[in-house]
Image 1 (cartoon, rainbow, N blue to C red):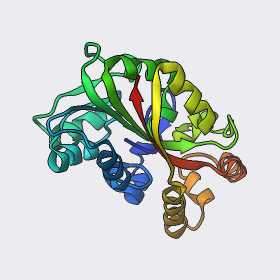
Image 2 (image 1 turned 120 degrees about the vertical axis):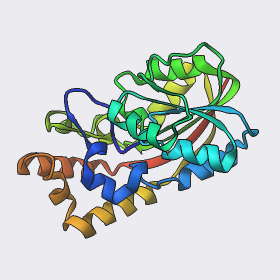
Image 3 (image 1 turned 120 degrees about the horizontal axis):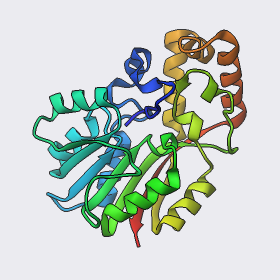
Length: 245
């Protein structure tokens, strides 16, 4: 989906035109490259039923349908996102809903994909358990997201008026524990922090510095605090594929 798009009280970073210029309509580091990598690993049969959790503007849905022959549905809480998805894919079924309450029966999907979404969710554990519920036995869960080398490493951002993936980033160990508790087995875990560095480089080239970019959405002091916290935390970016036990 996006480099942070869920949130109700704060503005959404993924809806800001400045981020869209950096990432296109995928709104995340690495664009569709990691999506392709994940689908090649999963090797789902044609016409498998897949849910894009946090589908954003529908770019992943379009790829999965056109290139891999999958039957794709989308879910996102943001009405503005879903309007663009419906324009791009008018024949696709999309839901305005939250990942913790997916409006389908149990054991329905062959795979779920959630790109730059897990760190945005209000209750990650409940959402993973819901994803487990709607997957068939052995179904695949594909995650890409920011991870933290230190837990709770951006305490200043929730009060800054802008919400992004950095707010809810947790350590890889925490992600492993939550997946195991929800009933998943990890099949693949790869570090792709280079994509996060590439995006940071694009931002610096376009705006002069990371701090100048954050100042577009918050005050000077909060932008400085945010950049300092990010630099101290040294966040990474991962691709993870798990199976429902």
